[in-house]
Image 1 (tube, rainbow, N blue to C red):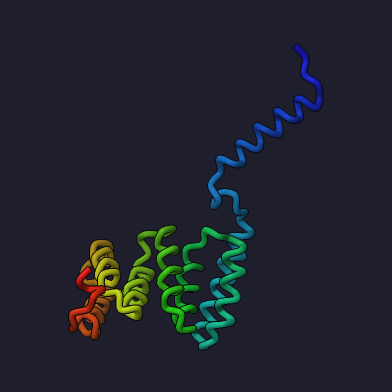
Image 2 (image 1 turned 60 degrees about the horizontal axis):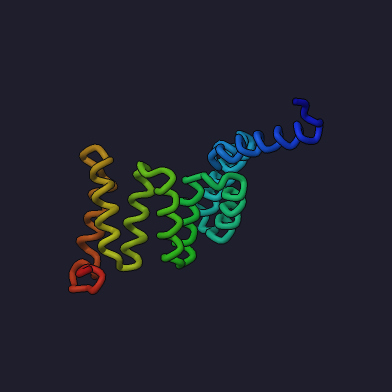
Length: 164
């Protein structure tokens, strides 16, 4: 049995296509894009430190375009959104970062803080629980989040969110 050149090319293309489809999205990102994304996140963190949240957010959009699997970019973008008073988006983005990198202690603390800003005591307590489990005692982040939860107005009152 002989294959024509076009049949061979079609079979080869199909095989290569299957091989590429089996790669995870993170594996498909080149090192240069990962590096670019990391540099953009660093620049965004500097913008946040200078109280330029909108500029940081723009840099983080680029960072996530370069590497959609960059957990740190999601977390820092969540911080930027928090500074831009978009607490729901902040919590969502930080949670995406934690889906990618579940052991990120800084992100867990930020997730708890974002949940508190939304008066979601249940989520804040979940974040605290995971933080305590992962962070070696004494854990300053866990202690600070616990104090924030205890001092929050929502924890002091009978809130519908607390009773869920």
